[in-house]
Length: 152
Length: 445
Image (tube, rainbow over all chains, first blue to last red):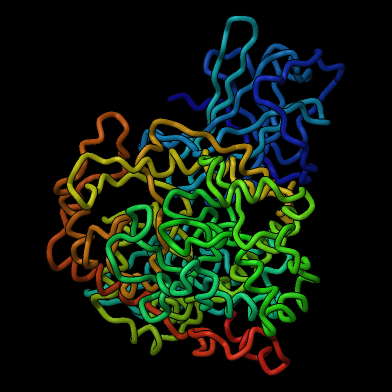
């Protein structure tokens, strides 16, 4: 398993919740943000083949066992880390590799007001080692980034 | 982060390590018989206190004392059954841990206890209800349970000199059911059998009359739920031990026996019981397949959670329904995120372990008579159903000695607290809430 470039910063503001949308309906026009900076309280990870820099924050941060949480995600090409992309498809999921099972829920993903995506409806129901997955698809190519989260 | 704080004597200050706001040091009494290491201690203090029941935004009456009093009366009310012989308390007997002590009952499943039911996210073994109030409605019409119908249930309230004013004091006016051509004696939807007489009677009613019956029927469930939320167990010997750890009360810690401590260490460590029996209510509120063979030893036929998901999604009384008091809230949104996978076939809900020593037998069909039987099963997984590629990898033989099993039983017995006010254990003399009842309701919380 690869764990690339996990950066942790202080917590930022809690964003407002948005209505859920179907997971497959997340395509949008490219962002117009000319010079974008990762919001405070976000973490970042680079996808496994290096194409994407995923900036994200969970709410709450860190997620608590047995409590629904959401993830706000910004997807940037590593070659242009100041331009969040919305013209890619993003899937967010999580699993416990040691137990070989995932969540009992499928997150819904929708565009967020801040130029990224919001995944809602996640829940870690067991204590232990979880992995949070970000699958970015552009054209026919999907690349994954993942982070480890220890849940008590 | 709590390494380096090992205190082999009396004092181990874990305040910072555990993130406690109190400045009181945690005094840890240790002995060779109680190998509770720092990691275990950090977890123990998170398991108590249990706190208040989580808010149920789908039930505006969930914490209304008058609704709870009315619901308590209905909980013991046999007239809500078709033959007048069965009430909720028939199967959820307070004297038997709010269960019935039998292996199986309806749906070929064991009756679950109602202790701390307010903490459950999903109800029934398969989670086919997503609120306590919607759960309470199902047995009223279930043919193998109370076998009544919603119109007859509402008529019981409307026609009774005590129940009617008690209902209307909480929920407002009942429909005028004097015209039996509008409100038949028996009517309910039976979508699986359109020729059922009660279904035909239901379809002949006007939309408005059907809605008025549904609304009153739902209020019966919300009242019963308000009562059941008061069935709280959270002052066990274990809770007092965890509290003593936090408060640094060495003499109170000493009340917790060596076998209980060893069992607690196993629960948190080697046994990994905490993975599913998590948090202060000792349940992750989710579903697992622990490969227990069916009671009749035939191949498993109960789909469990796999079927429960579709049921809860289509339940006309779920959290997204017009009868929910928060149809766009968090509980409602959870339904959107539910998914059904092959792994869910045969999964059943993780029960709470609070008062588990008083709620035998165990498992979804009561397959195991004692806690020792349960732990022997986890130790060897003898007769476990071959799960193929859908097994839970967390399920592996624990290889417990008989001594370890006895210690775990001692720990589980230390989760016992049946100290509910006796007024909550039987039918009240009246369904009406009076100021004198306020103290009782408060103590029930």
